[in-house]
Image 1 (cartoon, rainbow, N blue to C red):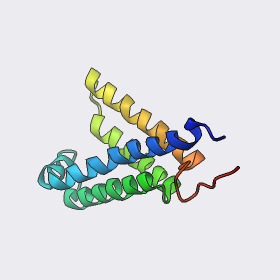
Image 2: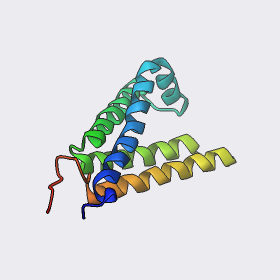
Image 3: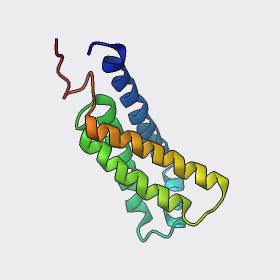
Amino acid sequence: MDSWSDIFAPLIGRILMGGFFLWNGIEATLNFPNTVVAFANIGSPSPTALALIAIAVEVLCGIALIVGVWSRPAALVLVVFVVGTAFLQTGSAQSALAQALFLQDMAIVGGLLYVSAYGAGAWSTSWHYKR
């Protein structure tokens, strides 16, 4: 159980997956007016509040995945978030781009479900070295 894939692969995977959400949250924060407009364009009743919630979810859960703290609950929160945004973004669009983006979101959901099922792996708060 001391192979590279047992120790480093979960760490690198967590950094990449959490970094994806952290980056998107930071980008949404820096472009906050555009983020609010995006929520308004989908017909949300309170686009500013939803934009703040979305940014908080992406940043906090992204950090949780990177660090390996509360990674299972954070992954489940992100599953709900990604599924919701996948259906809101694609809507009834039938273009090849919309289909590709939806499938990309479902691949991210698959990775998040894996983290929620098996935990953060090596170099996290829940990992214990077994010799």
